[in-house]
Image (cartoon, rainbow, N blue to C red):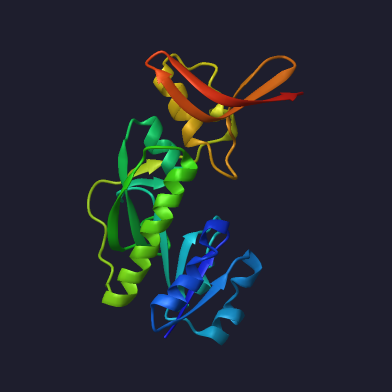
Length: 224
Protein backbone atom coordinates (compact mmCIF):
# COMPACT_ATOMS: atom_id res chain seq x y z
CA UNK A 1 0.00 0.00 0.00
CA UNK A 2 1.09 3.56 -0.73
CA UNK A 3 0.76 6.51 1.63
CA UNK A 4 1.68 10.17 1.32
CA UNK A 5 2.97 12.61 3.95
CA UNK A 6 2.19 16.20 2.90
CA UNK A 7 4.02 18.78 5.01
CA UNK A 8 5.75 22.10 4.42
CA UNK A 9 7.60 22.13 7.77
CA UNK A 10 11.22 21.09 8.05
CA UNK A 11 10.61 19.16 11.29
CA UNK A 12 8.71 16.57 9.23
CA UNK A 13 11.53 15.94 6.76
CA UNK A 14 12.73 12.81 8.58
CA UNK A 15 9.25 11.35 9.08
CA UNK A 16 8.96 9.73 5.64
CA UNK A 17 12.32 8.01 6.03
CA UNK A 18 11.35 6.73 9.46
CA UNK A 19 8.02 5.37 8.21
CA UNK A 20 9.65 3.65 5.24
CA UNK A 21 12.10 2.04 7.65
CA UNK A 22 9.61 1.06 10.37
CA UNK A 23 6.67 -0.17 8.25
CA UNK A 24 6.21 -2.56 5.31
CA UNK A 25 4.43 0.14 3.31
CA UNK A 26 5.64 2.67 0.75
CA UNK A 27 5.67 6.29 1.91
CA UNK A 28 6.10 9.33 -0.32
CA UNK A 29 6.24 13.03 0.46
CA UNK A 30 4.73 16.26 -0.83
CA UNK A 31 6.35 19.49 0.35
CA UNK A 32 4.95 22.13 -1.98
CA UNK A 33 1.42 23.30 -2.71
CA UNK A 34 1.83 22.88 -6.46
CA UNK A 35 2.69 19.19 -6.03
CA UNK A 36 -0.65 18.50 -4.35
CA UNK A 37 -2.47 18.05 -7.65
CA UNK A 38 -5.09 15.50 -8.60
CA UNK A 39 -3.06 14.40 -11.65
CA UNK A 40 0.05 13.78 -9.57
CA UNK A 41 -1.89 11.88 -6.92
CA UNK A 42 -3.67 9.70 -9.48
CA UNK A 43 -0.28 8.38 -10.58
CA UNK A 44 0.61 7.44 -7.00
CA UNK A 45 -2.90 6.34 -5.98
CA UNK A 46 -2.24 6.57 -2.22
CA UNK A 47 -4.37 4.71 0.30
CA UNK A 48 -4.31 7.78 2.55
CA UNK A 49 -2.72 11.23 2.53
CA UNK A 50 -1.55 12.54 5.91
CA UNK A 51 -1.10 16.28 6.50
CA UNK A 52 1.00 16.79 9.67
CA UNK A 53 1.50 20.53 8.99
CA UNK A 54 -0.18 22.10 5.97
CA UNK A 55 -1.37 25.71 5.80
CA UNK A 56 -3.02 25.55 2.36
CA UNK A 57 -6.59 24.63 1.51
CA UNK A 58 -6.91 21.00 0.46
CA UNK A 59 -8.93 20.95 -2.80
CA UNK A 60 -12.30 19.23 -2.61
CA UNK A 61 -11.53 17.07 -5.63
CA UNK A 62 -8.59 15.62 -3.70
CA UNK A 63 -10.29 14.83 -0.39
CA UNK A 64 -13.35 13.48 -2.22
CA UNK A 65 -11.16 11.03 -4.16
CA UNK A 66 -8.51 10.19 -1.55
CA UNK A 67 -8.81 9.68 2.20
CA UNK A 68 -7.07 12.72 3.70
CA UNK A 69 -6.09 13.00 7.37
CA UNK A 70 -5.20 16.23 9.18
CA UNK A 71 -4.15 16.89 12.76
CA UNK A 72 -5.55 19.60 15.03
CA UNK A 73 -4.14 20.65 18.38
CA UNK A 74 -7.42 20.69 20.32
CA UNK A 75 -9.87 18.21 21.80
CA UNK A 76 -12.37 18.55 18.96
CA UNK A 77 -15.06 19.76 18.60
CA UNK A 78 -13.62 22.22 21.14
CA UNK A 79 -11.32 24.69 19.42
CA UNK A 80 -12.23 24.37 15.77
CA UNK A 81 -10.55 27.04 13.68
CA UNK A 82 -7.30 28.97 13.59
CA UNK A 83 -4.29 29.48 15.88
CA UNK A 84 -5.18 26.59 18.21
CA UNK A 85 -1.96 26.67 20.25
CA UNK A 86 -2.12 30.39 20.97
CA UNK A 87 -5.87 30.37 21.59
CA UNK A 88 -5.49 27.52 24.08
CA UNK A 89 -2.68 29.20 26.03
CA UNK A 90 -4.37 32.62 26.26
CA UNK A 91 -7.40 30.81 27.68
CA UNK A 92 -5.28 29.29 30.43
CA UNK A 93 -5.06 25.70 29.20
CA UNK A 94 -2.03 23.72 30.42
CA UNK A 95 -2.67 20.67 28.24
CA UNK A 96 -4.69 19.67 25.20
CA UNK A 97 -5.17 16.78 22.81
CA UNK A 98 -4.01 16.23 19.26
CA UNK A 99 -7.04 15.16 17.21
CA UNK A 100 -6.47 13.16 14.02
CA UNK A 101 -9.44 13.73 11.74
CA UNK A 102 -10.68 13.00 8.24
CA UNK A 103 -10.86 15.98 5.92
CA UNK A 104 -14.35 17.03 4.91
CA UNK A 105 -16.27 20.07 3.75
CA UNK A 106 -16.27 21.93 7.08
CA UNK A 107 -13.40 23.48 9.05
CA UNK A 108 -12.17 20.86 11.56
CA UNK A 109 -15.56 19.13 11.47
CA UNK A 110 -14.42 15.77 10.12
CA UNK A 111 -14.72 12.37 11.77
CA UNK A 112 -12.08 11.53 14.40
CA UNK A 113 -9.64 8.62 14.14
CA UNK A 114 -8.07 9.12 17.57
CA UNK A 115 -6.91 11.71 20.10
CA UNK A 116 -3.69 11.87 22.12
CA UNK A 117 -2.74 14.10 25.10
CA UNK A 118 -0.25 16.95 24.66
CA UNK A 119 1.34 19.20 27.28
CA UNK A 120 1.34 22.94 26.56
CA UNK A 121 4.42 23.67 28.67
CA UNK A 122 7.46 25.33 27.08
CA UNK A 123 7.91 27.37 23.93
CA UNK A 124 5.80 26.99 20.81
CA UNK A 125 8.77 25.29 19.13
CA UNK A 126 9.04 22.75 21.95
CA UNK A 127 5.29 22.11 21.88
CA UNK A 128 5.32 21.60 18.11
CA UNK A 129 8.22 19.16 18.43
CA UNK A 130 6.27 17.11 20.99
CA UNK A 131 3.17 17.30 18.79
CA UNK A 132 5.21 16.06 15.84
CA UNK A 133 6.25 12.96 17.80
CA UNK A 134 2.62 12.35 18.75
CA UNK A 135 1.44 12.78 15.15
CA UNK A 136 4.04 10.27 13.98
CA UNK A 137 2.69 7.75 16.47
CA UNK A 138 -0.89 8.51 15.43
CA UNK A 139 -0.08 7.92 11.76
CA UNK A 140 1.42 4.54 12.60
CA UNK A 141 -1.61 3.64 14.73
CA UNK A 142 -4.12 4.65 12.04
CA UNK A 143 -2.31 2.55 9.44
CA UNK A 144 -1.44 -0.46 11.63
CA UNK A 145 -4.88 -0.79 13.20
CA UNK A 146 -6.93 0.32 10.21
CA UNK A 147 -8.82 2.82 12.36
CA UNK A 148 -12.22 3.93 11.12
CA UNK A 149 -13.02 7.56 12.01
CA UNK A 150 -16.06 8.35 14.15
CA UNK A 151 -18.29 11.40 14.16
CA UNK A 152 -17.39 14.21 16.54
CA UNK A 153 -19.52 14.55 19.66
CA UNK A 154 -20.03 17.50 21.99
CA UNK A 155 -20.66 21.22 21.72
CA UNK A 156 -18.39 22.94 19.16
CA UNK A 157 -16.26 25.91 20.20
CA UNK A 158 -14.77 28.05 17.43
CA UNK A 159 -11.34 29.69 17.57
CA UNK A 160 -10.57 32.75 15.46
CA UNK A 161 -7.17 32.96 13.78
CA UNK A 162 -5.02 35.45 15.66
CA UNK A 163 -3.46 38.41 13.86
CA UNK A 164 0.14 39.69 14.20
CA UNK A 165 -1.22 42.79 15.95
CA UNK A 166 -2.47 40.56 18.77
CA UNK A 167 1.16 39.72 19.61
CA UNK A 168 1.57 43.19 21.15
CA UNK A 169 2.20 42.75 24.90
CA UNK A 170 2.19 46.43 25.89
CA UNK A 171 -1.32 46.27 27.37
CA UNK A 172 -0.80 43.12 29.46
CA UNK A 173 -0.89 43.54 33.24
CA UNK A 174 0.37 40.21 34.61
CA UNK A 175 3.87 38.73 34.44
CA UNK A 176 2.39 35.29 33.76
CA UNK A 177 0.50 36.64 30.74
CA UNK A 178 3.65 38.20 29.30
CA UNK A 179 5.48 34.90 29.82
CA UNK A 180 2.72 33.02 28.00
CA UNK A 181 2.58 35.45 25.07
CA UNK A 182 6.33 35.31 24.47
CA UNK A 183 6.59 31.52 24.66
CA UNK A 184 3.46 30.74 22.64
CA UNK A 185 4.86 32.72 19.68
CA UNK A 186 8.43 31.45 19.98
CA UNK A 187 8.66 29.26 16.86
CA UNK A 188 9.67 29.65 13.24
CA UNK A 189 7.08 31.41 11.11
CA UNK A 190 5.22 33.11 13.97
CA UNK A 191 5.13 36.86 14.70
CA UNK A 192 7.07 37.29 17.94
CA UNK A 193 5.61 39.03 20.97
CA UNK A 194 6.49 42.71 20.78
CA UNK A 195 6.10 46.23 22.09
CA UNK A 196 6.43 49.41 20.05
CA UNK A 197 7.54 52.97 20.57
CA UNK A 198 7.42 55.81 18.08
CA UNK A 199 10.77 54.88 16.55
CA UNK A 200 11.40 51.25 17.52
CA UNK A 201 9.86 47.80 17.68
CA UNK A 202 11.06 45.36 20.38
CA UNK A 203 10.57 41.63 19.68
CA UNK A 204 10.95 39.01 22.42
CA UNK A 205 11.80 35.31 22.55
CA UNK A 206 13.57 32.73 24.77
CA UNK A 207 11.65 33.83 27.86
CA UNK A 208 12.43 32.37 31.28
CA UNK A 209 10.90 32.90 34.70
CA UNK A 210 13.16 34.41 37.37
CA UNK A 211 10.52 34.59 40.09
CA UNK A 212 6.83 35.44 40.37
CA UNK A 213 7.47 39.07 39.47
CA UNK A 214 10.21 38.99 36.86
CA UNK A 215 11.29 37.37 33.61
CA UNK A 216 14.34 37.31 31.36
CA UNK A 217 14.13 37.15 27.57
CA UNK A 218 16.06 37.89 24.40
CA UNK A 219 15.08 41.09 22.65
CA UNK A 220 15.56 42.20 19.06
CA UNK A 221 15.35 45.98 18.53
CA UNK A 222 14.20 47.12 15.11
CA UNK A 223 14.32 50.74 13.99
CA UNK A 224 11.18 51.74 12.13
